[in-house]
Amino acid sequence: MVFVRVTGRAIVNVHSANTEGSVGNYSSLSKMFIVRRTEGGYEVSEDAVISGNMLKHWHAVRMVELLKELGNVPLCDSCKRFIMYRTSVERDSEFDYVTACAIEDLHGFLFPDASIRRESLVKFSFLLPVEELRSEYSAITHNRVVLTEEGKIPAREQAMMVFKREHASALYGFAASMDLKYVGRSLADPENQSKVLGLDERKVRAKAAVLSLLDVFSGRFGAAASRALPIMKLEELVCAVSPQPLPNLVHGFYGDYLEESGRVLKAYLSVVSKGRPLKVFASGERVSKVLKQYLPDDVLSVEESAYAALVDAAKVVEEWLK
Image (cartoon, rainbow, N blue to C red; front, side, top):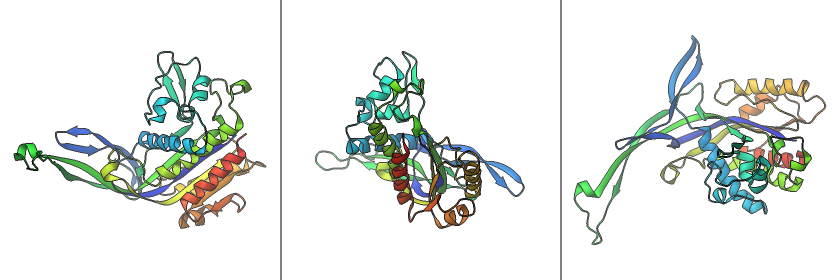
């Protein structure tokens, strides 16, 4: 049984990861109203956001690639082609889908014709510009030039398609959770041992789920990645791993998320997890200073990079999964 909770912050420069369609030749970023705490109380303002659905899709894409590398793990034809949509194959039960496809196991599915579904074990929050600093965004003008077979530029109205697309930069907060206890196990009948895959295959799937975060948090996501791959740098990361159900950590959006997450983990360690293992992998100078106030040295492991923290977390997940 393993539960993973992740929170942190990252700089994301000049991205156009989510847009909300277009009006004429203008594509605008996805925006949402956000509540921020201020000296006078609270304020609500609109800001550029990146959806959890976007992150979830690219996490699943990297999982497919990793699972092909790590072992002979079954994947359905749609997921092999990175089409993460409602399942198109009819099967008799939820566990049949779990057996047949590792992505439908981890990321959930819906087969509406027979009303068979599985909740996702992997969950992402929206990336939000942090509480202390709003994003800045503006539109960039692009054009596409057309040539004839003779190499000539035809009439102007035929030769160029000018369009504008908004791009944003911000310090973003993020959060994610993974209930990896249920990998390869029926959610509809979780105590039925006949509906559980072999331990080796479950470990491969769980390990791939954690390691796939490396790609997402390196900036491999976004609708316009071919010409606006997010310029991303992880600033702070906290990854908690426990064999017991674990509360979500406080989202990196909040200015005091480290202190609040530290208090959550301290309370969990003293009551729920008393006498049971808990490991917290972290990176970032401020992260280390804050969390050391709440967690003992045998629980907190400060790593040289966020990527090293996630690799070590994946090793513990693989060891603790039963």
